[in-house]
Length: 146
Image (tube, rainbow, N blue to C red; front, side, top):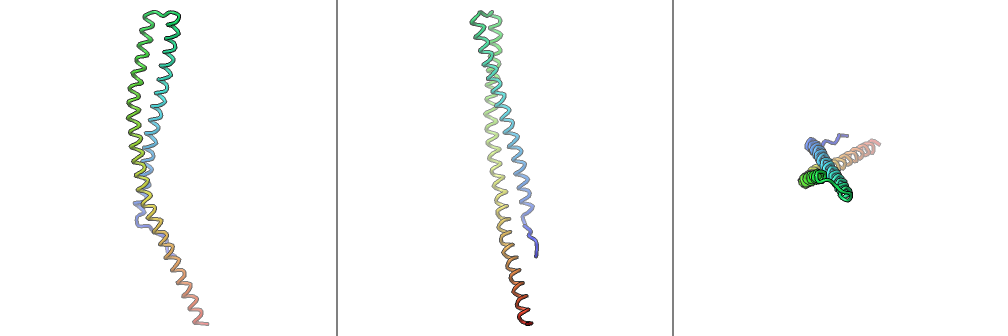
């Protein structure tokens, strides 16, 4: 009985490797996006906390210098939020682009994998036919002797 050899095995292995690398890139970019989103939430909480502090101090009386300082800090947080939102939007586009590339790599691998499966099915059918022919020949030889 012979062994199955797929002519495009090296192509299949290359496509598997390319898919693996793309999965890693996609995962890395998704992780980066998640860190950006977490930082954005931290900024929102920071802004909310300082806004609340400003309101509490304003209710009991706040010096103009403190008010300016708190307002300046809140403005810095708002600017950071705007910058981070832009980076998040850009990162979302990058993640979606990487997702599209990953889908393409998966499809490329699947095409060759399907070809390999079909060739393996044909190979098995041929091997089965060879075995049946051999059995028939052995039986025919025994019948001729007997």
